[in-house]
Length: 451
Ligand code: PFF
Image (tube, rainbow, N blue to C red):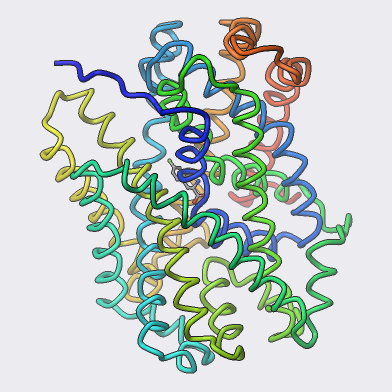
């Protein structure tokens, strides 16, 4: 039997729910390490330009697609043109790939919360503490299981309403705390060089990989190109302004990412003088740098505890939306009960997540194209599948159903101010750009061509 499609109460409910999905580890953990690795200011600049053009247009398109059809990804594409059903299918695979490794990182956050809450601040600030932790065979897997177990429990009980209520309080507190830590970081000895590295673009560091990395990050951070925003759009009421909602989500998401970079990158300079190796640390960056910041701060244990609690919360609201999506797709497809589906998704995610976790220890020698298992999952979903889905979505909207059909949907509540930008991006700029970037960067990664 079909359950009645619920909808968000109003604009605030919608914006908060979408922002809860968008703001997560992508902003606080992933953005700073990519920005540090890909040249600081130049990455930030490329990211922000992409956010207000691509990000804005694609998010409008996805939410409008969902609201217009009242369906989630697979159904929405199928309802408008059967030949494009595969786009919905590919989009739906992406959250299933992300959820396991996202939860591994969520497990690391949970561990750090426990470490800070039990007052072991100085230990966590020691060199090698993080590497030692993730290379253990059992402990990180245990934290991963705890995190994904918690996610599954919420999805099973269906308490998202509660999550939404808590978000209303937690999100503003997260912003205040991030600003506080960012200001503190900026004034640490030697941090000014880091502020410059992060804010002043160095054009000699620009390459196709910078753009691809920024684009992958944008899709990830705004939960785009994986069907999520289509589903959220299907819950959106017709009398809520779509354009201004998208603007708000975008500003909120980018602001948190920006602040997270300001919190972490100057601190890396303060501790290491900004040498290449420290900047290119990758996924571990946040876990190595922030404990050192908190370790040197008066009251660092308390601030660190509150901070990791908020990050954990942001991560949970995102992982819940990831699992919820996977569960609802599997359910729709196989007509299973909610409980059974949750169990299946949980077991499969655990099976995929364990190798990602072990990839830093026991399975350290397993490298694909020089990437750890976790990085490989991350690369395939963010740098390959998401651009492919984004490309197909642009072709679909630009040439099959035509931009006007979505402009009409947006204009149900008044003029679509950026409709020219929307049309040009969706029809011309985005498709050409995505293909070029995708080809050059995949060739580069495979070592066929050096850019
Ligand atoms: N946007 C989330 C983040 O930045 O952490 C990650 C994410 C959550 C992606 C939920 C997709 C999703 F459905």
